[in-house]
Amino acid sequence: MKIYAEALDLSGSVRRAELEQAVKIALFVALTALGAKVYVPHEPVPFTLQTLFVVLAGAILGWRAGIVTMLFYIGLGAAGLPVFAGVEAGPAILVGPTAGYLFGFVIAAGIVGATVGLNRSLGWTFLSMLTGFLVVFACGTLYLDAAFLHNWRLSITQGLLIFSYWDLLKLGAAVFVYRASTEKSLTKIN
Image (cartoon, rainbow, N blue to C red):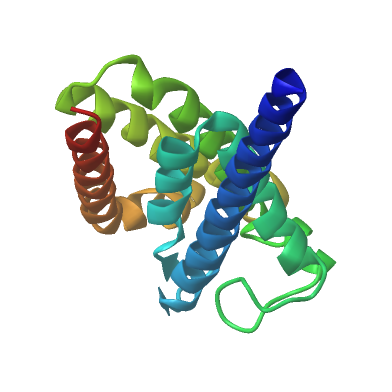
């Protein structure tokens, strides 16, 4: 009987952990959608806050849940929910000028989630998140050039360089938020 009771208790703990993870994923989907709504129109790709939440999702949730979060976010937009910048929604967005960036979100969240915890130093956190940002912009710029602009100089200027100062601010914010959240977690453990 005691073993059965412990198994039931463990099952409750597992369910609680799964529910907590689902809530965190939903929160980061919502934050990424909110980050899309904080935007400055620009052609062909607007300025948004999304990448901030992409790297934080990977860092805080881990690589698997970070990937699931971004896939869920993209799926909601493809299904027609207004989660992308502006009023764009629906499956056409998956072949539009921002498609490369969106798919880069999935890869970036996975990479940041897999690497950020390998070393606790500030420099490593920065490097891990910087890699996430670079992955998003590499995917976005490559796709933008291949599918739309067909001009490397213009693609790099309009798909990467124009965002550099803005994204350095977001990178700094992401590092700060992640470090602050992990410091609180470490303090609670000790």
